[in-house]
Length: 330
Image (cartoon, rainbow, N blue to C red; front, side):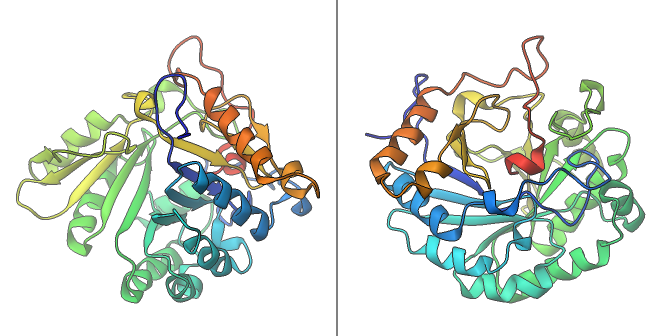
């Protein structure tokens, strides 16, 4: 049976975190000092991840995105990419990275079969990059980004988190950068997933505000017709035909009723939402000598069945998840 929840949403998209560790410290995600990382022995092995994916594919999962933390910190990641590419039923495999290690790993990832990348980059200003990430690594990210393009990755999308009071000077320059280099910019509204509890609704730079800024600074945009209703981003293309952008408006325009995603954390928990309060353990099953694939499938089915209508951000009913973003998986 397909993975359909009680609201009729079909689930065919799985996000897999391979580590909770990261080599930058974005203020909206991680504490500045050493984060509370989980023990390494709790991380799923590549063999355990592959087995989970094979079971999920048998239930109708067709798309996978590898995340972290920073996934390129996971040793021998191209090996996992190669194995997941070969799983019957998987039609799309992508990876989200902060780009710091792309120069060293892009070629191996490409040779393993990966073709789609999302690179996290909030600003084209080196000093603002240091302010946001608390690391002076802007040049390494840009070098890795252009090297990935040279290697052949296509498409490359850039994820830019929009926190009011910081990134306003970057909204239009990023769009121009995307037009010039053939990369789609994805503007992401600042969400309540930070490790320090600093999120406030007033700090969210909304999609409508950014859209108006870009149209004023560059030119008119048109919504892309016949867009995938399950995609998290609302996409636009410039009327002059050069480039496109997208907005992930989780706060101002939630897309929960079209959500088709499940998540597997690095330590083996299945989650039906980034903001979920509950999660279901599958690591023990993956490591139990007597647990068959049907037991794993039952956990996946149960998690989908338990999925709520939506996260309720902005309402009095919203409760922040007990885990920060880097621990859940981006």
